Length: 231
Image (cartoon, rainbow, N blue to C red; front, side, top):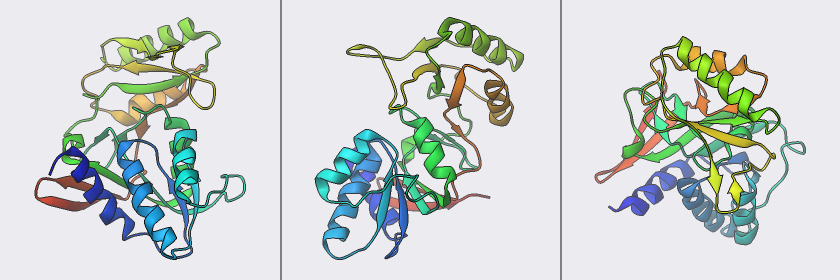
C-alpha cells in the first residue's frame, strides 16, 4: 500500500467504532480527511451522527460532503473524537499540531469520552520529539515568550531550534488568531515535565503534547491496520 492507501485503511477501521446517533469530534489533517470522506459515504447511506470539527479546514470539507455539523458550544459533550497524529509513542502519548489546529483539537478531544488516533506506521516512535513540537503562542510579547520557552527547555536539558511557523502570506496564524513556534528538540524523554514547564509561561496558549488522551491508536502499514490500546 502507498501512503494514502494506508491512511484510508486506518480510517476504515476507525469508522467501525462510529455508532448511529453519536456525537463525534472530527479531526484535522490528511488522515482525518480520509476519515471524513468515508464518514460522508456512511451518512449518505443513513448513518445519523452530529460532528464537531477541529478546524475551519475540516468544517469546509464536512459541509462540502454533507456531514452534519454543530459547534462545541451547541454540543459540549462528545462520545468520540477521531483524529490523526504526527507522532505516537508506546503509551499512546502524541505530538499533534503539524496542521496548525492543535488548540481546537485538544479542546475537542478533552470534551470527548474517548479519542481514537489514526495514523500510518511511520508515526510510531519510541520517544516523542523527532517531529518538531508545535507550541501555540499569543502574538503579543512573542519574542519574550520564545525566550521563556528556551529557558524552560534548558531546565530539562532540551536544546534545538525554535522556529516561528510561516505561511505563504507571512507568519502562520491559527484559526484562533495565534502563532506557532515549532520546537526541534529531537527527543523529549519527559513529556509531562515539559508540558508543565510550557504551561507556566503566560504567553503559551497550548502545546502539541497530547498526554494520556488517546485510548486507541489504529496504525496502518503495508500488511494492513493494527489496533493499539493505551496501557
